[in-house]
Amino acid sequence: MIDRESYTPVHQQVADILRARIDQGELAPGEKLASEGRLAQEFEVGRDTIRDAIAVLRAEGRIVTERRVGSWVREPRQLVPVDVVGPARVTAHIPSPEERRRLGVGQGVAVLRVEREGQEPMLLAGDRAVLVIPGA
Image 1 (cartoon, helix red, strand yellow):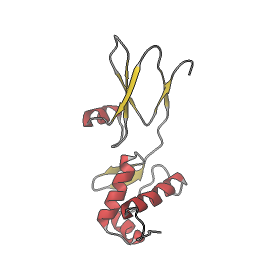
Image 2 (tube, helix red, strand yellow):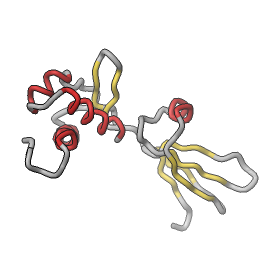
Image 3 (cartoon, one colour):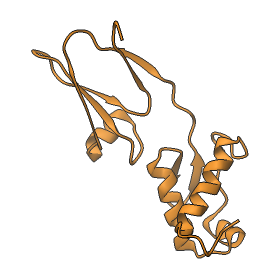
């Protein structure tokens, strides 16, 4: 499973395998991942490698982690259509910790900022907002 001769870092290979298990439904939404120790044994790597792989998946928003409890496959988010009417400027950025809490986004998930003249900017979670542009 792990190719130690590969130029791909081992933690990335582990993350790729776990991501494939999630995508194929082998690890279902809400399901708890095996412990770091058990995953380290399965992949024959150190716990630091497992922690790094889990950090990759957490940054992608695929799993959530609770300290001293474990990690779970994240429930899929419902997409929310947002109409962008009239001239607007849309930018994306990595949110501040306060923006992450307010919008409920995982680490590494981008935030979309929609600015319209004369209006307060609107912040949207990049993992569930769908911008609908009339005529597009």
